[in-house]
Image (tube, rainbow, N blue to C red; front, side):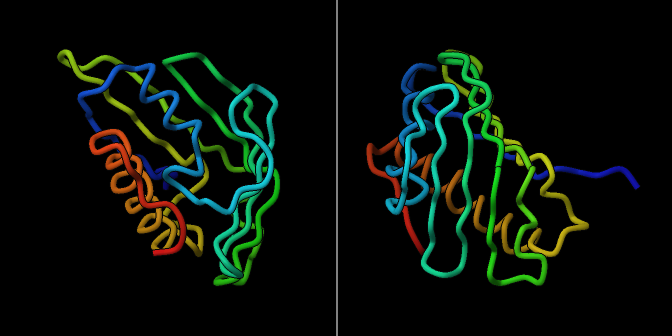
Length: 147
């Protein structure tokens, strides 16, 4: 069976630069409990969601207004047996123009139906990417943190 990574897309009425800047402003849409930096190539940052999820990401690709890629270098997911399930997965945001609007395509490479956290983690990404980042881009305020 071929692995199918979690993917999602949103289309928003903002510039690609605004989308790019918002993605890199992790505390405005994912979690306000962040240690480190998420703005430049090579930056590393750790996000925390109470004692449920802690992960460290490294910015491994950054193409202004087009692409952001994070490598998860360490993870601790306390709600599943393999707490390091996200480690060595990749989180990718691709930004393109779409009929005078901006499309952000999200892929969590390695988050596939065969892994234990798939159902919980896809619900989480639905909330943070399709919900919180979308609200940040369309209304100016996201919903970072536990929900």
